[in-house]
Image 1 (cartoon, rainbow, N blue to C red):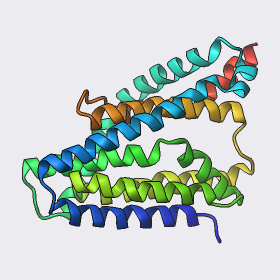
Image 2: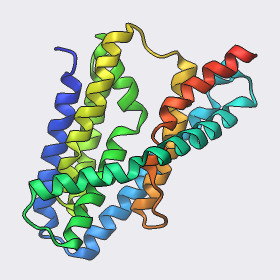
Image 3: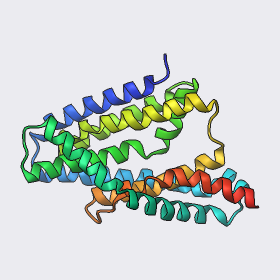
Image 4: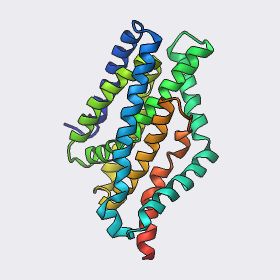
Length: 248
């Protein structure tokens, strides 16, 4: 085993799942593919809810006080959202998806282009905003094993099948995002030499859970929340924890 093996396996399962999903999707009626997307949206909402419950984590409450965790998550989303909006992260992610679509597929029609970009954006967010992404990648880099990323790889593989059945090859392109984010976090783990404190990780997990709610709402076609603009909240959350703890 070597640092980064978890990300390699994860990318392989995403590509395999996307390929299977595309092959199945071509044989499924639109109604069935929409139903698959709805089911995945509901499961994403369930995962989001369980992750968001980390706001009640005892370690976080001990670190910042009983009344602060909710405010920390709120502050993280507000500050992170403002930063992401000013940086136009959602627009940049969509542009990356369009750039990949133009080079990886021959179909340049507006409908297929939108489908490719939506698959790339949604699957990238689902695969890269969960707590397993952060903790698993850091632990892999720290030499503590890649068990968490192996579990994530299995989950992402099945999710990729469902996504690709509806969105096509845009899901496979999200492997680029997985490499960039998980690979970067693995390198960060190599540099840190220790895992994040439990309180900081709980804040990140709770914030990431709310981001996944936004992803679920997109999948269920309820509201197109620009979740990519909110991604800086994952960086803001541990900083707010440390700031509040210092001021206590």
